[in-house]
Image 1 (cartoon, rainbow, N blue to C red):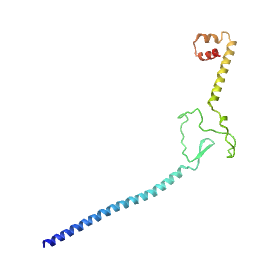
Image 2 (image 1 turned 90 degrees about the vertical axis):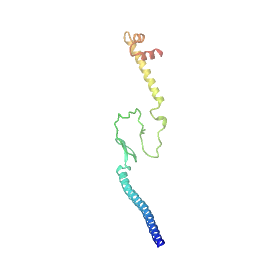
Image 3 (image 1 turned 135 degrees about the horizontal axis):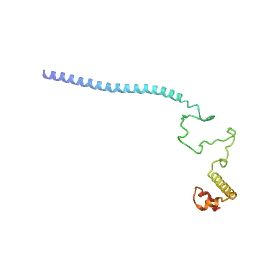
Image 4 (image 1 turned 90 degrees about the horizontal axis):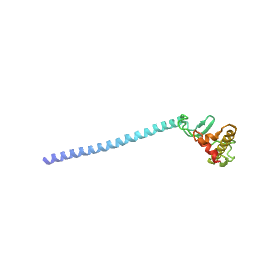
Length: 165
């Protein structure tokens, strides 16, 4: 009789152990199934939202740099105050003439804004200013010779340029 009870108890224990293992495996499979279902739903939602977001941005429309100056498509136009980033030189080079693709681009040497041109213009300006100071100094009585000799006043740089030439 004792062996029959032992066999029945062992069978019940092993059957409960097998049911617990199947239950654990089912829970793992169910969690994976719910996770994959959420990922698939999220992909659909994100795709729909992403497409509507891209369409709302209007990337196919050209951006306007300045009034009447239409640029490239595919960007976001951001307005900022003009004094936020002051620049002395315009970064966009504009060329007059035809926009035909068969027309050649202008020569690089003909572009305005080279350092040599700036120095030449500055040199001409200094030469003209020194000639004007010489010419106006001779017509006035007691002209610029006393200002240059005294060494006082804000005109030191100009008088030394006149003396050096």
